[in-house]
Length: 297
Image (cartoon, rainbow, N blue to C red; front, side):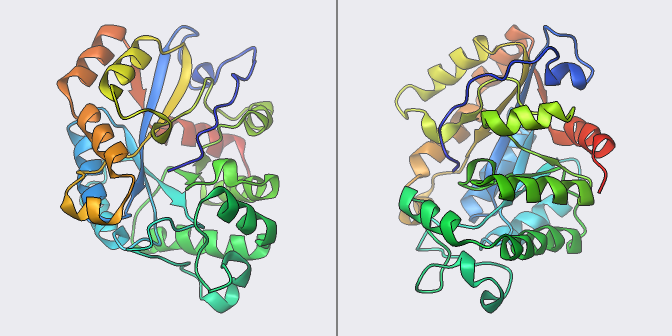
């Protein structure tokens, strides 16, 4: 899950959707399934949400226990666009994960007992207060390179539980890595959006949605109404589908959010509203092309 604060819309004379070649009144929506690779019930729900539902892409958490399975699923489905969900925290103690980099090389990323911090407000503050940028770069490169070593080609980078990386220098580092690897970056807080748009880089035009910010009760109706109210321009939803099975319920307190996301994304209602509203669901491939053309390593 990501932080749930919502930025104000960034004013611009040209929307990101126009940078992608769409008319000003076009309504574009990225429906990205975050947390792919965390565990198997998420993996299954993400694949179904993309192949049979309205989701358009996903983001892979490389250090997690379910990541090898997720990468195998992607290798058999080269048509599924995916990003790398850069991961510096761990919120599921029953299925813990750590950095890909040897711990002695990234001590500033670890808590006093040698584990990744939990993404509580206190945990995020502690991590961001001590994390060295050179050690963050080591870990981010390890996660990106692990995907490349598996023969997979991502479209973008985004962040797990740290909105826009949590610090300006982390976002700057990530944009530099994106330029090097030919990727885009999900940027959604107002300062970062303004900076990227100033460089001619497309980012969301409107309020970013993290599905963990929505109430469970009446979520399907809320999602349908949000589609009907979707403004012109480029929009993005970060959703978190899971089957919500017994295994999920035993390890993940967020399973009700994930289960209700899965139910809506794969529902006939979701497809019907998209058709009725003439909303174009896209993925990060078009955005990646513009970023790659605009950035030089």
